Length: 193
Image (cartoon, rainbow, N blue to C red; front, side, top):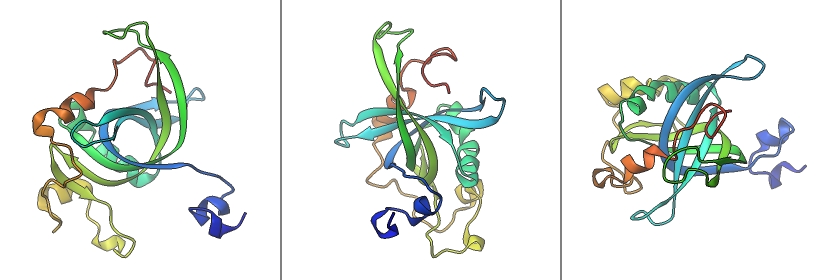
């Protein structure tokens, strides 16, 4: 395969084809899991937003978190998710795969639905309750200039902390509703690998 025709020459060098999705959405249900073979892995649910900012539709992704930096970021903000804060992220995922399920509870009980399984491999930005707390370094920035995610949130990193135009208005409750996602189910149902 010609590297010029691929979105990433790295995919070609490693012998893989990839579909990559870049989106904005809410981080939900961060959890440590174990594969059938007993290998540990980090997983989370994402509620990606699609359509008009004033009335976005939601797409649910059940993700395995890959990459050292991405795992570090997700673990770093897991407490905020558990505390009910709105953790909004600009992310890149790949290996999208639909997974059908049936709602086990709630108003949609018994109705079929589907989630999308994916791999979360890069986080571009993170906002907590509308405040920007992390921005991935550009390729030009050196590793020495990059501070740890929690340090940048507490001590500041010189970046603008204002809510960007791309962040939904969480004060009106859009973020809180979207962060709940579909009904939680047992380990055999939606949201579990």
